[in-house]
Image (cartoon, rainbow, N blue to C red; front, top):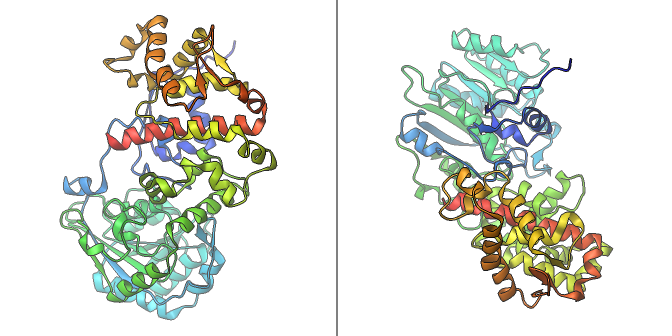
Length: 504
């Protein structure tokens, strides 16, 4: 007898930022709970992906870092930006990160840097500290150097086999019991570890990811008896994205709208301190002068995402999913520079269109695609109509009443899309809406507006709810057109839910 699979009614999914991974998705899809509640302290993009798309931006509750500290759920931080003379100007970012070997060359044997780190460790005092390193070798060397200076320390990393390495759980117990003073780690304490008594966190390498920065900071923010705040020592040199920390500590700032050195105007959580060495202010000013124009930064971000995709030209959805949040927010606020408003133009300008896409681009297909790319969308109602035309890749020149209802219901039955219906307060109420009422809603709103603002592409056709011009008959059979159409509809749907979430 086959084993019966139990489908849970309610599932709590912790560390939900990992939901973007294939393994996590396989587990979720296997159990298929009727309702799943995802929990995470870092919903922002992780490894270039976003979890918001997975749940259609359906967020029942959130609390920011600032709110959590102000409400006493976390302890305040005393953040010190310390000037580090290490020169990163000769190093190149690979997929958004510095190469481990390059960083080792800068760190290993750098006595001046060892002395700098030790000096500030002693200055701000600590009973239990955690230092984040760039590699196994770096963690080993830091533990070795601190031990030489009389501060008992260990290195923690996967498959540890070094002279100063220690198994993770054992190291945590030793730190809690004050048998050691510092753990130097590599990607082992970003999440899933609670050492509430930590009183110091040290950033000993460039932290390119805002999510990782906040995860590592969070290791020191847990409440513990007798703990009033956590000291954060950030050793900053002239690496890419230096100077972002003050904005991250307050929830971020849009790229292009603030400079990296006006941090003094930022309001931090209650009882928190943010203090920079004055030499860093000069460094940030110099880096700001050399920074790329926003147009160049968007292009650079495009190429970074393309590299993440192993050289594949990103679709709109892939660029949206992987793009740096700050750059994406800037794009949304500045229509002129926004590649999502004219994606084929953007690809054409940087010579990224395929031969088949060029054929579409140079014909009437481009005009139609640009129409659905830019059509006004205060509500999401136009999308199920466009999905009806797309028809899973077998694009139609017209849709019947029945086809409209089928596409409409398929769209609004998914997830919590039904919540976009006015005066509908529950899923049970939504289920009571008749097909006739659905069709009436579709005809009175999206179909009506598509005909009115569709630049003559959307037209009346006898026997159909809505049609498109016959001149499109050939281009709708072209694969490049189909792919572009699908990508636009998917992106605009997701962007609508992102925007609704942000505005609420």
